[in-house]
Image (cartoon, rainbow, N blue to C red; front, side, top):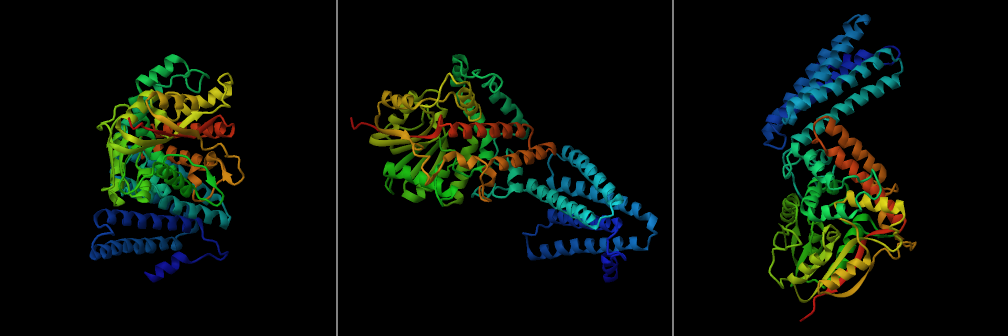
Length: 528
């Protein structure tokens, strides 16, 4: 066996590993990965110690056998090198497809053909380059790329085959594993075959958007979305929740930042600031209107000690939020239930305080929404929120302004964006006393602050790479590949493209100071 290893590693007189050697090395890696994948299916390395020993022994035997077989090529005539290359790469492609489909164990036939086509194309190109190229550097790079490719597919297969989600904030932490869970994980409400249909249903509510400026700003178009708002909002969050958690985190909102403040720190600061405005403490019972997957709820609960009820219209978000609450040990403080904040399932005078973070922008009727908030709020209780709004610099006669506004609406499930004056008037009409209202971004040009929209721009750090323009393009390319391979459901690419376009609109509108996602309001329910 050692002689075989020595032969395998031996270089020729010029110090260059021949093409046959590189091909044989690739075949060895493939055989090793295949044996490891198959063994892991029956004897997971997380099991008993004896299982781990057998697993690695089984894999090592395959590896050493392959090394010995690969060494035989040294005894073959030089004119047979191409045959060795062809045989090795054929076995590599076969094994790659084999362990991928075996590990995935879902829609095997569809995935088999997709992976097979891509693998054959890749290895045909690599075979040609290795056969005609004399450069040691090029051959080494090709061989290394093949190894990386095999490792990547193997990791993808493991990720897709993993039927467990932790719901502790780690499910979308890694790029490859996280991307394979977008719109396809055990908690999903939508079946894989339903994603594209749900997108089509949503898209019909914005007929003409991005094709003709003003198409979705007509009274008819707005009324359609207002009447179908439950379908619109529920469909939207079925489609985008995983993308949001993957790219943004568990708190689905913006925040301006101070110098030397991280993105996550700025997000929590805004949440703590709202908790302070409400005066929450361990004796308080608060409502999170439109809570998403509960990121702000958990942060505020830890910060204030308050008990918090979350409400979201989306069943998938309820599942994810409550699992996160349990995993974080907050199930006694935080609970989320499905419901419509236009008709809340709570008794009157229930909550000490209410907050709504970038959620009431989905409401078809602000006055009716705020009236419900007033009903369930205790007399003297406070209602605070951050709402999306078009600012005073917005000009409805400016075609570019209208296009940006509509781009934000279609990409975020909104009936229509309203003005600060409309928001304040709706609060008053609902029977609430308006304490104050203003845009948190009024001083965003202060050199000591970083604009809220900069996170979506090209300036980036490794920590926030996914949120930047380039990071979003990389994510889009990744999900495009996954959808082609049948790993991601059909329709995933459409959702990714929609979110990328609206992110660009949000940035441009923010720069022009015609839009804010953080229009703050504070209102109080009268004592009588």
